[in-house]
Length: 247
Image (cartoon, rainbow, N blue to C red; front, side, top):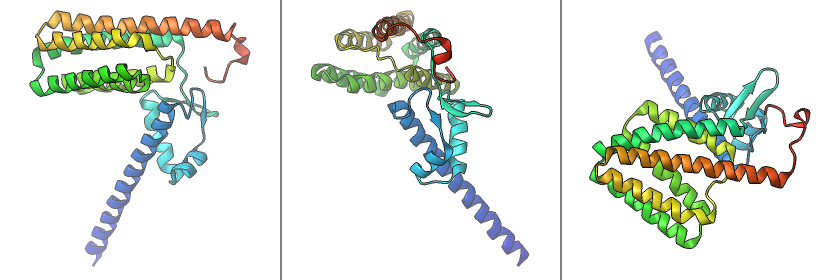
């Protein structure tokens, strides 16, 4: 009897552990979506009770979800103050672009040696959808396809640690929230993606890597221009004491 009770108890514990893990993942995904969409903007303080009520879960899964999001670079925890959506200054965004360019150069060179026909088909399909987004003038759709194209390249490289690092960098750049793909840049951008895919397909190792590096660095330059223009439009910076907490 005691062994049966032990088995039931163990089974119940395992079921509860699985349920808790599932709720944490659900909470993490929902909070991440709110951050990436801008519903929870950079600098916003995250309240566990409010989030738990919105998501229909207890505070436990929300607390664990916030810890996971801290590891991905989306939130920061300040002792005795709480949890905040991270704010990325221009200097940090600049460094992130440099690191991302180096990683993508490595990815491009590797894929020029290892890409499969199925993977190439997927890349060309994404480029075709990019062409359609350009024709419609759909900036939001193009931005999403752009992320999918680069994410696919990293996935195809087959390096788990590289993929984890890349995802964190992309999340942090999204937090910066400076749109670097203006309407008039779209034709240039889609042409760059097509050239990258062609170089990879042709097995041009050095060229594929160089094209990806240059593509990301061009995005960094557009980011700088957009940030400078935004700064001029918003006027002089506020004194340090007036800036939002946790900048």
